[in-house]
Image (cartoon, rainbow, N blue to C red):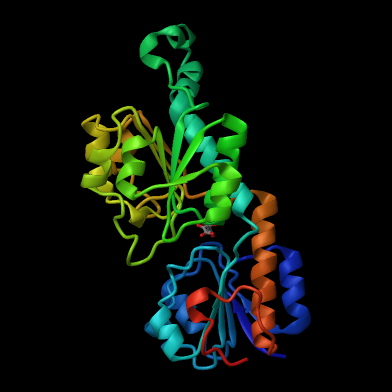
Length: 326
Ligand code: 8YV
């Protein structure tokens, strides 16, 4: 049986599936595996199961037998695609199973920021109920407003559906390529980024993090947004110039933000974003429901097993598809 290493704990069912087809070792530490601990465990591994650990030359030099890295995550910005390509290492991710769950969370952030739910929650718990009727604590409407989605992939579309059919919002979008079918389903309008920023009441970022999307939102982009607009990020923190976001919020160039992701994670407690009352923060939990994390782990286990047993995994990432020899 091929040998694999599981660098993260996974549900028993996923582990049982792997054990039917592979011999495996797993990280059993109480804290997440460190880089050096990971590098030490790779000598015999033909397959590696991870969530987000950087896969680059350094790691691959320690893994002479490796055929596949299975990421329990749809985003794979942790893959150094060039080093994987030159060594013919397969990389897989877990698309689709998390679309609806991440979309639910995106709407939660929109609603939380617009209706100031964390601020008001705190107020109630602090015994200041009477203050809730003060106009300074009123929110803004979500229904009937314009949502601009930057990155109309599968998750973007699931968000658009909720906004359109649940909240009667108008949808603008910007994407690498147009999506005629999505335009039809959502009545969404494809617009240049500048127009999206100028015309949206809510600007939501749902792009993968790549060289092209790094700091996609910077000073110039925030300056184009309406002063009354709310910014939501459910993608990757590095797609935003965080200092520019902080400035835009502090200078009231935009109204508020809802963030599931940060440039540095875990976010440092000194980050000014955490001090702003009009910023709703979450610890990167877009996909974190019991069911969805289970489904992601199962899918990652299947991708791992397929690759090390000579079959084609369902989810080889696009950039690594060509040139893979099974
Ligand atoms: C991560 C995510 O997998 O799938 C992604 O791209 O960002 C998440 O679902 C999750 O944070 C793992 O810890």
